[in-house]
Image (cartoon, rainbow, N blue to C red):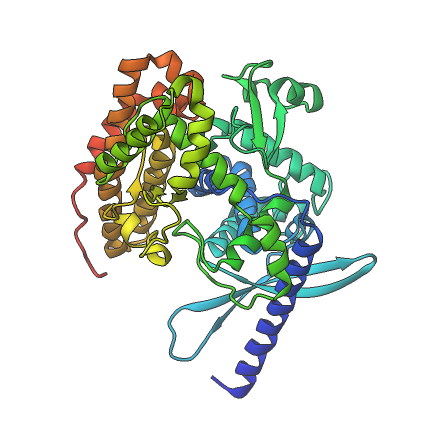
Length: 467
């Protein structure tokens, strides 16, 4: 690689850095925009990836899914996304590295002035870009345009942001149950909402879109395009993301982001609500958590109630309020961390998500049947990763993810499903649905999910060839 090549790479990286700085400044100034909750984002991204990769679906639908994914991976504004051209992606090989670095060129619009910007594109963003090139190839020829996103039905080129936002809402509605976007407004207050009745009044979508929905009862929760920028900012700041598909590809963060995230990532209120929910299930419902230290934890909680001479039904709010101080609870990957000693620092806290909690060997790690929907979605995501790696011929990686999947089923999903069935037998299915609405999709597909678990557990390691 020549000095000129290196100089060009550095110039592009500098422009990417300037773009990220601008993104950070916007996040600081516009902190009124909420982040997309991780659980919702994970499920949305997983569903969009399936749509984008399904060659049996209409190209227009695949294109919308791909553009939303590209937006989630780059943090570009919706107007910038819609203005992308087919020649916007460039590739650079750095000496001694086989993998290529991809840069996406976009237009920065400031009043009547236009200038070019660059940003780095990760593997998933690159895949989405190439699919957009492919699915709209004929439309591009017909309309005689070089815009990347160009549905033939669009009346203007580039498409107007409000038109795209309307169609993004239509897609989220069409795949609402797959995404987990239906009647979850209490779980995700950060998102915008609209009832099916309001949708019908506001937009002239096809009647088929509303099959399976109720005008009065069903509500769709959805993010704005700007919330994808906030979500990317958040993950960049923490230098990591929950999905294996998304890489840590931008590390040069500015200090201005700190103030924004101190305010917006303050999770004390969220942790408090999470602790309330967990303690009510343990204390009020009398459900024993799953985990190696559950007997010791239940003994200490029951001793506290006994020694304090509390009546659980009458004093439940007081009991929970005191227990939250004595038994710290924090949401963790694959469940929760519950420390049985007040104010004790976890000796493995920094790495517990990656090692101890992830493998269920930490004595403070617990989970409950009310988390079955999250665990199931995690397993579905792993299946998609396995299928993708298998299709691309990455069998070693596919087998690695298969091991994770079968471990997750054995140690998390199966025990949670079994506990859910026990609670249904004790309290009745209607009570569970009323008190834990997030489990309704799981309950309604319980037999099917159990069959899926058996099938997943019986998958044999793939034969490694040329990998």
